[in-house]
Length: 453
Image (cartoon, rainbow, N blue to C red; front, side, top):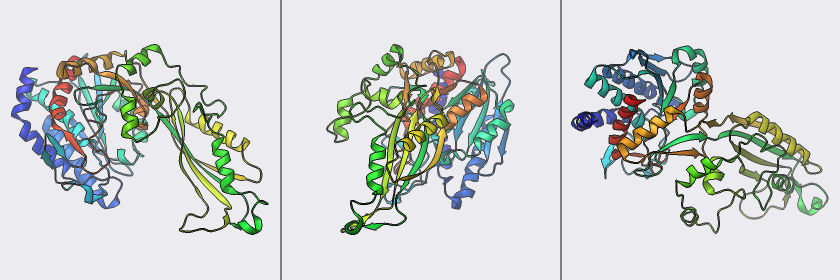
C-alpha cells in the first residue's frame, strides 16, 4: 500500500481542491430555491466520475432530483460492489452560528469546514478518488463496481425505493458499500451491523365540542388533558421502563452473549454521559445497559404532548382536545405496521370515559440487521485494521436509515457500512466539518478493501 500512500500524498492538495469545489455548491434538497444547485452538484459528480474512469455514467431523472449511476465491470470472476451515497445536503440555519460561510470551504486545525463535508459529499468523494487511484495506478479494478448516488437522502429518499425496484437487475451486486456513518471516536473504527426501524403516529383525544369554563363545568365533564395524560401513562411500566402494549416484544430477537460482549468492547462510559447531560440518573428498560437499550432494544417515546391554554397568565379552561406525537424505534424482526396496530388497539382499549380518539399513522421502516460474521464485513474490519492499526468493532446503532434496509431487501445483498466521520463533526448543525486525518486514512482503507474483498 506504500505506493498508494505516496500517490495520495502527492495528489492531496489537488483532491482537496476538487472536494472544495463540490462543497461550494449549495445542494440543499429540502429547499425548492436550490433545485438548480442540486442538479449542479449531480452534474459535477458525473464529470468527476467520468474523469476517474467510470463507465456508463448517467443522470437518471426522477420526479425530484436525479439519481446518478455508473459502473466499471471488467473484473471477471470477482465480486460486484454497489457503492451508495448522496450528494444533497441539509439546510444551514441558523446561519449566524457558522464561523465561516457554509458553502465557502475552510481548512483549520486539521479539519475541513463546510456543509456536506462529512454528510455525505466528503465520504462519497473518498470512493471516487479510491477508484480513480486504482485505475490510474493499475489500469483496472480488482472488483466490479456499480454506483448509485442520489440527491434526496436528506428528504427521506422518496424516489429511491421505486428506482431500486425498477432497476433491481441493473443494480444487482454481491454487497452494498456505504460510507455515511462514523467511527466510534478518533482512531476507533466501527462497522454498524444493525439500525433500528421506525414507526410513528399522532393521537388526538376529544371530549366536548368546545372548550369549557372550569368554574361552571369543572368536576362535571371530562377534561381532554387529564384524559391524554392517563392514556399515555398506560403505555409504560413506570418502574421497569418496559412498554406495556400487548405483544410489543413478541418479535424481538433475544440479546446473545456474543452481541453483548461486542458492545462491552466499546467500553462506553455511562457515568460520563450522565454527567455531560446534567442528569441525576439514566433511565430505561431494566436489565440492559445504555448501549443495549439504545441499539438493540425497541422503544416507544412521546415526542410531543400538547393542548389547552399555553399563553401568558391563567385561563380557567377545560380543554376539549389534546394531542400526542409518538415514535417507536424497532428492532429485527418487528413489523412496523404490526406495532402500529398493537398500539392502536392498546390506546382504544385504554381510552378514558368520555373520550373520542383519532389516530393517524405516520412513517414506517423496518430495522436493518446483519450478521457480523459475514465475509464482506470481516474483510471490511481487516481493511480498517490494516490502515488504522485497530480492528473495527461491530456496533448496533440506535438511529434509523430506512434506505439501508431497502437496499438489503430489494437487492438481497449484505450492506457494509464503512464510515469515516466522527460523532462530533456537526452533521446537520452549524460548523459541519470532516477531520482530514480520516480523509487520508479513508482513502487508503477503501483501496485496501477493494483490493482484498
